[in-house]
Length: 151
Image (cartoon, rainbow, N blue to C red; front, side):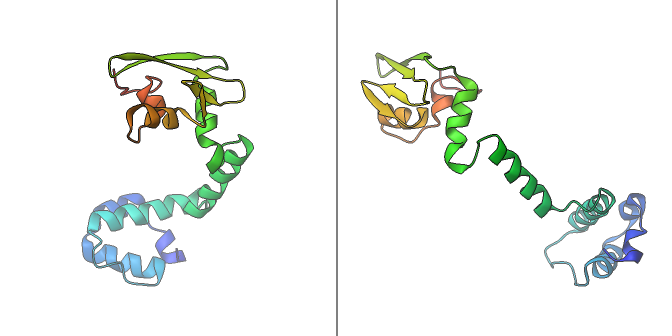
């Protein structure tokens, strides 16, 4: 944001009409706003920029970088997210019973995070749910470990 645009207040943005917001946008960003942006959207984007500038210049890119660092430190990188979520919701040795298609199915969670169903090892509850039903399913939800679970 330019110095002139950064002296605005949130109240001034709230009171500005579409033409004024376009002018502020040009001054702040050096380009015209996208043609599809409404006054409300310009107001929200400019207000966010003003608040980000006041909060030690934390941009969306910076926030994403911090989130990546947090996930890496907690072991929740892309390949480990399902395992980390599973470990957080069930303990090692947990036995899950599920009624499906008129039969009771037993699923066992091992200490290394593997999931065993019908004597076969699976990488996740979702893999078991898919094998059990023949369709892709959210495993924790299917087995009743999340809100909105299938009965």
